Length: 114
Image (tube, rainbow, N blue to C red; front, side, top):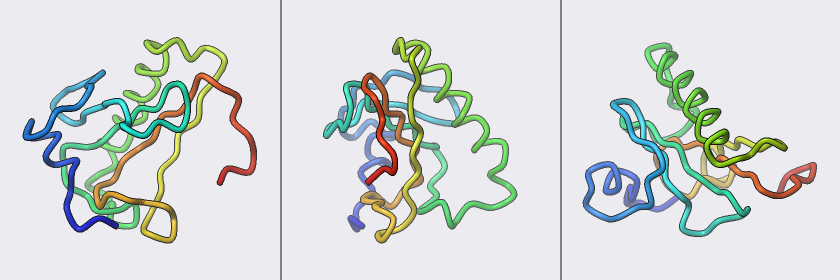
């Protein structure tokens, strides 16, 4: 994984992002290397390195990320369906050391992924 947490710089408005949703708990923005016509990253404001690092205290925030994903998918017109992906650790394909949910849609999703 990258040593630097670019997502914290986006949260802190130190670098620009094409934000589609922002609230007190999370931020959603368009991926700069989209893997589908719609590819949005949903990140918590709280710094959590990987999915393996979540705790019981993160329960409400994790639910909130999913509610935001559903709302953003609807706003993006993904009525035919979409995929949510959470990569965990370098072996799981995670590139940035900050928990994030990929919202992918706008094309048929094959199985198995990757």
